Amino acid sequence: MRAQAQAANAVRAITYPLGEEQALWPEGGNRLFVLNDTAQIIWEGHHAGLSAVAIAKRLARRFAVPTEQAEQDTRMALAQWHQDGLLGGTGHTPQEQPKDAAPERLPSLPLPVAEHNYRLGGLILRLRLGDTSLSQILLPLLQHLTVAPTTPADTVFDLAPDPCGFGYLLGQDGCVLACNLRQDDSIAHLLYHLLAYSCSGTLALAVLHAAAVADGDSCLIMAAPGGSGKTTLTAALLAEGWDYLGDDMILLSRDEPPRTWPLPGPLCLKAGSWPVLKPYYPNLDTWPVLQRWDQPVRYLPPPQPSLDRAWPIRGLIFPAYQPGHSTSLESLTASAALRLLIAANVRWRLPLTAHDIGMLIGWLNHLPAYRLTYDTLSEAVAAVRIVGTAS
Image (tube, rainbow, N blue to C red; front, side):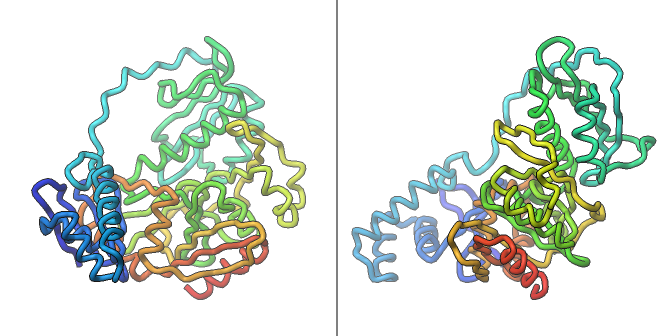
C-alpha cells in the first residue's frame, strides 16, 4: 500500500497509491501532497541521489520534451518542495508554539438574562447571555441544539456587555476570548467558537471546510472554499427535505472508513444568496439582517435537528457557482478529489499516523467524488439528488 522514501538531506516521507498518481505524507506532519506523473519521477530521482540535470534527462525521455524545459520543471518542483519543508526544512512538522501569556480573566458580570445548554459534536456547551437583545437573536438560531438545563456542561461561554469597556465581551470558562465587540460581531464570534470548541474536543482525523447533508442513513459532503455557493446550495437542499449535518466545519472521524459527526450550526447567508433563495424561503425578507465581518448576512436556523451520531459518507461533491456556466456534474479521480479537498482548506488533526493516512487514501480510492459546476440553483439541487441516488 505504501512506500517509504528518505534521503540524507530530506524528511522521512511515505507515498501511497492514489489512482494513477501518488499521495505523499511527510511522517509526523499535518500536510498531504499529490504527486502527478512528472512529480513522481522528480521525487524518485531526488531520493535516488540524482542531480537536477540527471532527473531532467529522465523527464525529457519520458515525456518527449526539450531538456531545457524538463530541467526548469525539475528545479521549480525541488524549490517548491524545499519551501514546503520536504527537502530538509522544518515546514513539514508543526513546531511547538511559544506559550501564550496567561489568559485574561473575565471581570465580574451581572447575572445572565438567559442560560441554556446545547449539544454540539457530542459535547455539552452552556451559554450565558448578558442582555435581552442578544437572547432575542441567538436563542432562535440555537434552539435545535437545546438540551436539558440540568445536563452537566463541558464548557461555559459568556456573552455580555463589557462592564469595563465598550461593546460586548465574549468569554469561555472564566477567560476572555474577545472584547470590545459590536453586538453583531459578538454573535459571529460566538457562533465560530461554539463550532471550534466542539471540533477541538474530538479525536477526529480532520476538520473539513464543508457542508454535509443526509437523505436516509448516509450523507454527502460538499467541500469548497468560501464564495463557492456551498451555503446557498445547502440551504436550498434543506428546503427540499434533506437532513442538515453542518455547513462550515465538518468532522471526519478516524473510523475505517471515515464517518462524519454533525456540527449543525446556523447557516450564514450572504446578501448575494437572498434573491435565489427566496423561492425556497418565501419569508426570507422578514429575517433580521446582521453584520458579519462588515458584510450583511441573514442566519438560517436549521429546520430540524440532525441525529447526533456518526454518519456514513456515500460521496464527495465539490460545488462551484459560476455565472453563465451550464450545470455540469463531473466524476473525479481520487487524486483530483484530494487536491480539491486540500484546496477547500482541510485541517488534519495531530497526531497523524501512517495507518491514518493509509486508511484515508484507501477510502478516497473507492469513494465516489464529483465536481458540480452550476449557475442555476434548482439544477444544482437536482444534480445533488442524482449523486445521492447513484452513490
